[in-house]
Image (cartoon, rainbow, N blue to C red; front, side, top):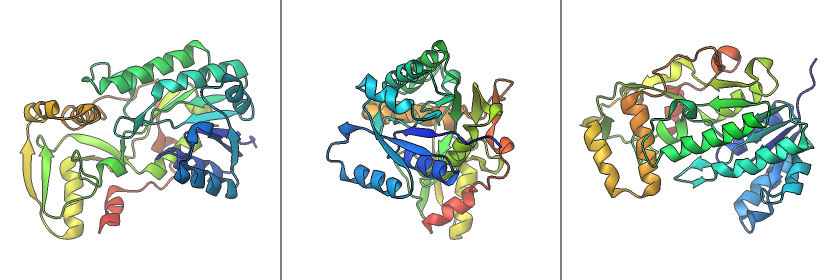
Length: 313
């Protein structure tokens, strides 16, 4: 039996990071969480760290701005998983991972690095609209640094986080579903892919010791969660036993609305456009360079979107 890797989670108090920590502990991995001195007086993050410590995780203090401490933290583990935020509406620190890449290179002991990706595959988004393209450009810079350093990797493309997209019925600026009306993006028939955040974490931890995922991009595409906006809306209407009033916005009008938004909202609008008008999550085959997570790990009983929507009743 193969020993389970020791795991270091960077960004372990964040939206996805805390779920990855829980999944790692649940999977029986010795789990370390990078505790940055820069956390200051963020009481909520400290309390999260302490709760993980009580649950068996190890806290290791290191700073992304202190190379020596970062190398020492990396030397304690076999696998590093980064969940540093790359969402403009929260915080955007993708390029901080270049310091982590250098530390992993210098430590020389890491069997696998999973950088913070978890959304659209950046290698397929060279055409992305500004300013949202910044996310993909920066993730590709990190990928190049990883590969130039010869670090073993797995890239995780998790598509749409259910919490951001499903609750609001795929509308920008909403995270809870209306019982009255909904705005369709175009005709609402473009398929997208939605994944519960806890399932993303569960799949991610499954990958870290799997030779089938080494040096590949793994796409999380649960087949029953490949749905159009209209299908998501239909599931909600079924649950509330009521049809919503629907209006529609064309691609041209949707893009024109960008001029009235701030930088973070403009970035988000571009991502919505690519997903719900262009179909960027489903308009390609995975091919030989990748694998699909739900096929690799059929034992994970992923959350279906109808079940996810029941939380809002």
